Amino acid sequence: MSLSPLTSTVQVLGAPSERHEEILTPQALDFIGRLDAAFADRRLWILAERRRCSRNLASGTPLDFSLATAAVRADPHWHVAPPAPGLTDRRVEITGPPERRMTINALNSGANVWMADFEDATAPTWDNIIGGQLNLLDAIERRIDFTTPEGKEYRLGEQLATIMVRPRGWHLVEEHLTVGGRPVSASLVDFGLYFFHCAQRQLDAGHGPYFYLPKLENRYEARLWNDVFVLAQDLLGIPRGTIRATVLIETITAAFEMEEILHALREHSAGLNAGRWDYLFSLIKTFGHRTDFQLPDRARVTMTAPFMRAYTELLVRTCHRRGAHAIGGMAAHVPGRDAAANEAALAKVRLDKEREAEDGFDGSWVAHPGLVPVCREVFDGVLGDRPHQIERTRDDVDVEACDLLSVRRISGPPTEDGVRANIAVALRYFDAWLRGHGAVALYGLMEDAATAEIARCQIWQWLRHGTVERDTVMKILDDETSALAQEDPAALTTEAHDIFLRTALDRDLPAFFTTDAYARHLVRRREVRS
Ligand SMILES: CC(=O)SCCNC(=O)CCNC(=O)[C@H](O)C(C)(C)COP(=O)(O)OP(=O)(O)OC[C@H]1O[C@@H](n2cnc3c(N)ncnc32)[C@H](O)[C@@H]1OP(=O)(O)O
Ligand SMILES: O=CC(=O)O
Image 1 (spheres, rainbow, N blue to C red):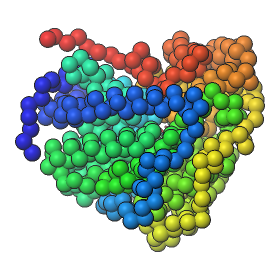
Image 2: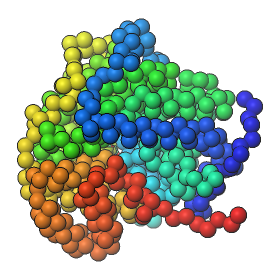
Image 3: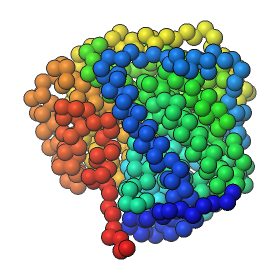
Image 4: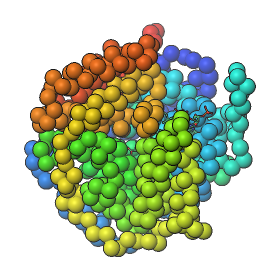
């Protein structure tokens, strides 16, 4: 492909650090610049479209399956691409940030797939972003082994999980890379750097460049990703259709466009995943102003709620009808330090995975290596020697708009414990995130950006409807802030408290806590001499 010169080049504003130059090569930056030149405006259009849709829904426009795309849904003939090498059997997928030791642990975990996460499990500091890319490159080149000062050895084994990378969503920017003074889309940076450095290496190793796509709201966003894939493959001379991507269905509007999303990406699709935590976050965000969408305590909203079952069953049916994998979601319980807590967590995860396997999912997510065996055992029990159960088309499933929106059936007032739990988790998570940790274990649960979003949005929703008094929230917030300061004198309590005030207690609900908190707290630009 002959390339026209770029009018503006990508500037690096992030502080240089060890080995960053291996990722931020002139050629890689040129590649990012080309993606930016082609797609920056469409990304802005996508974000404007999100705001327009959100205003419409807030003003009472009913959410339903689109008439404009009825023909796509009705056409039984189209299917997605066949699974690419390494993605046929996906019964266990482990997720986690691409930190050095976790990269090795995840690849060795015995899972079929590792979802290397730049989104919810990564606090997007400059070092985490570029360090994560280096770790992926080193892992693929098999030069990531190391020994800790205490003598613990981390070595890649023989049988490794297939890597799928989750870039950050369309709403985020990377402030440390700019074009003409404007930050580049974080999605294009995470996707582009990985694709540039690792696509051919992955193909040489017998796999391919594979992705998980987060937080899509509609078919236009899927089309945008598809066009990004086409251009990226053309630019590097990689055949079209080599990339595979699984889309997380984790917004309420995307649940109404599952077919359309698969269709838009069909040449590159690797199915759908039920991103249950973001889905709940999206539901609260979209309908938080409506009394009939009030949710009870976070711990009471389980996957057996009828509206959650409608969503997951529709996902399985949609995928299997189109020859695509349906991947289950994240059970939040993680193994604890004592045997009893451990056993309880394993039992809860087992139940969750059993329900998914019986419903027809082809595999599912776990958050911790200690959960790989239970997920494998459950899916082995249902799949046996088959790599998946795509042939189970679930024609019995009949889900209508009202089923996806029947939240009222599980509503109930929040308890004081529920309010306290949300505040305690949100504060502690914000503190961890500010210190560079995008996923943490708190009170026996995995917490990441998605689960923290639910915690702060629920407080906003309960205040908005007067189900909880502002004085009660302020009192608990003070208690929990003091408790955090005592637990850990190094905690960034002032900043975490500030993020909570801005994102849970304002009159309007910010769409994401990460956008504002990133700009205020994580961006560290260096001086640039022109
Ligand atoms: C809603 C969503 O978006 S879900 C997807 C995004 N979220 C995630 O991916 C979260 C993934 N999970 C994690 O990050 C971690 O499991 C946490 C933060 C919840 C807990 O981590 P820890 O506190 O380190 O757990 P713990 O101490 O039990 O870990 C034991 C070992 O397992 C490793 N480990 C734990 N989780 C993982 C993981 N997901 N991947 C790889 N290794 C892991 C630890 O690194 C540690 O290894 P080490 O002994 O060699 O140091
Ligand atoms: O991204 C996954 C989710 O559950 O949210």
